[in-house]
Length: 583
Image (cartoon, rainbow, N blue to C red; front, top):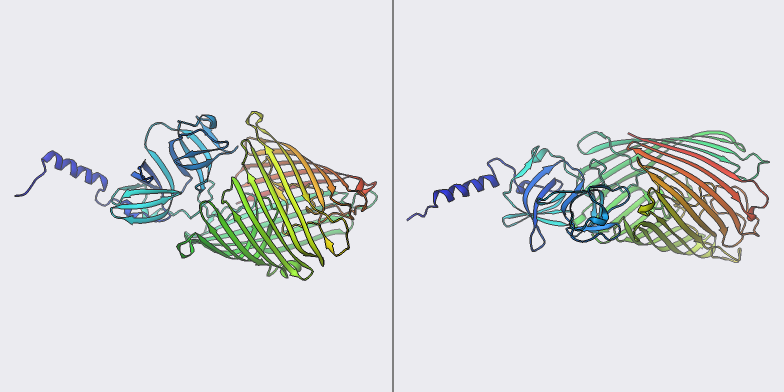
């Protein structure tokens, strides 16, 4: 005989089945890598997140919503086991860092790994289901379940669970892998804010165009430290930059970036000069998830630019291979320069290795850099670095390196370090203070066939932010030397105001490691006497404004008071303006 369900039970089961997957509805089985979703549910005992509701959306900020169980540790806390990092730009709504424990909050920001979720906002929320919001990085089927990976979380949903969406899933834009977002989804070009050109013009579904105009105006007074001789120089540069970004798939990125610079220079010694220069800044292809592994290969011209520009700030041609795990990343590169006005760099081969913890907020790394020009110029730099928010209420840095090889035909060995800390106490907002000492070894017996003078990579720029919104030349805007045969003690005070505005006042004291005739690669065009080590003091005032997403403004005033190493000479001054417009 046939067994029938009682009528009420039959109706309830039918209604539940209809509610889970109505006819014609899109389900979890329709989701694909790149979809951006908000998932409500709860964690199971095995650590997976069981989805109860799924909504597909247009790409936006990553987000987590749940209860913070433990107190914050410095400027970080944990939610669902994910390490959340906060800073002075994080917006707090209805809650404070010190009172997070036991509070249900929604955190929005950018996910960069299990140890690095950078929070743009933290706000209180009322009771409800836990939520995970982000890009789907992996989809697979496991029996009746669809298993999704979003950030570091495994999410399980019944394959027939309905997915709500304001648009059909097939027409929703996919979020690129490893995103850098500023209100919209953008591919990760690994560019600092100053270099980034947002792709505002969408030419096709996979091709965007960005453009930037930059004006630089410098006035240098008495670079030769002698008012009796003509030595002033005014330089104006206007640079137009265009950048094409092609993302035909989640695993490929193509970039083509070129710039045209027109220079007007009026030098009291050399007279008036005008010139223009076209250059290819970047032109590369990057393949991600090679062989379905966390392997990335990049080929072409790349703008190498590390955080502090202590190693790199240069466009080079070559190959970069990167392996990135959640807790560490290894990057190996081989490069040269195929075409440029600098013939020396064209004749040089460079090899690099960079092993880091893949954490931008508390960064630790070991590096090796080898540069081979010819028998007279071949050297290797081995070093390590720390920077970020390792101590609560501060951010700091340490770069240290040993060098060995041949420089200018002499056997070379040297060492250098740069260590500093910026104090950001909450009771003193908006003010901050910085102290730093940098040292590059010198040679006590020149001309004996061996040198102990440390030399930087040759691709460095020594430019970074301290407590403000804009970077500056941290070895002095007027002197601006290479860290070679030199010690630099610096102190600074600054203030960071609303609307992304800052003011920094920085004092530098320079002293040679060993008395010598001159500084390496400095703006100052005057020889030292070879007897006294005291180079002098410099005071810089740096103003920065980033109050509009399309505009960046920087103003620098600097003055250098020469020391005994220069004898009886005159001070030197600098005034500089930089304006960027991105469109």
